Length: 636
Image (cartoon, rainbow, N blue to C red; front, side):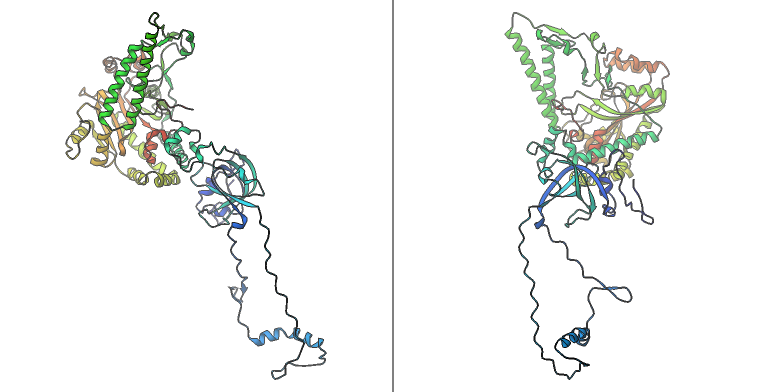
């Protein structure tokens, strides 16, 4: 427990974990005094070695010389130098010694020292022996290790000093070694940047590493390389800071919505419904493992065959050509080229098999989903908003935090963390207002509760990130309609956009960036989009061309929040499903909400990963997702 002394607001104890004897380093290193008040406290700490240095005791700088003892004066003030003394005072202080010498020479009786007395003739005393010069000592083999240890609780690390008499230092020096240490906190014996250090008295545990195989042994591991070692990335300072920021944003989400009266619920990960109507989905099935592999069949799922593969290759070719023309997303282009190459290879394999066995056609097996685990086609969910509607229509306001999946090959991550809300008896303006408040709450929370981590990412990644967040808290979000955005961008004369913007087309990253960073110079909330670019469930406006949907766009063209007022009218929703050619049987449960007690309702979704990117200044979602999954990348 933490204790306090009377009259001293600074805690003098340390807080130990409730479930172990270990002291979390954050409680030592993030104190206002850097931990100085804890000097002399015995603690047990655990962590991983971030850096190390071994020195022999002889090479350590000598300790500072002790100060001269102070002499007390009558007023109690110490003096660093003795008072001056006269020769007579010195002589009088030696009188007893002189008398003993005279008695030894046979001088008896009374005598007095006079100023005019002749000096006594005595045998000179032998000189005192001079001290011997210091003899060279045999060299000592003892040494000391200085370890920088981090336990992931904060940016700072603790210096741990270990003497070789305690444990062979070779076991501790490699980066990544985990240790559990007991010792005393004290001021550093060697001047440096550390305010406090731990002098180890016992090493309770050592987790060694294979130094030549440990990837973080490199001095600087690029982000691109670190993605190949997701199991070790949290030990890097940057990923650790990003993780703590992510945790703070998740906590802030629960605090915000709980204080606003929302109820938390879990949206299903497996669903029978395409929640947006036009997305690439991951299909869930157990049938593939049950097919007789000896027959070497061509797996045909709803008509998948050589012709289907060739058709897919044609579509992927068109996507590559479009990305090459725009040139705005090189990473997406690279992923699309890989996807196209693999599709062409698969088509070539099918053709080769048919040519090698002209007399027998490969047996095509069509999966019978009535025999599947769920007895129907199921997918990993793209969005949970449709399911949240069921609970909003019964409980009022609800929210969910969870994974969402997209089988998108164009350089995007396959699994994302998304925050979604749904509010009953609310319209578009209500959702926009809630989104604005929520966004600003997140910005303020991370500045107030992650100051050390934000200072680190500001120094290491983006120097402007903290100032940007601060300006957004007090600033105002600009709200414009899609039509206004197209109009103002169409009047731009000093900038030629790579893709010409026409009414009805989606706004590209280039358009959004110019709109936010050049024209308005602040976040922009765009609403009333054309119905062709938004999900089928967005409420159709009276003009018949636009829907009540919105996006919150921030600098660097990041669309952080997308939302809408959902269509509560049964006939309108049925018409939209038919218009888009969606399988109606998938949405019968959703249509039931309109048949029985329908209400106006609205909501939105915020990509947590995108919010972390915006907060930290990083640019790739794979660097903020703990275990990123993307096209052809799922190694653990």
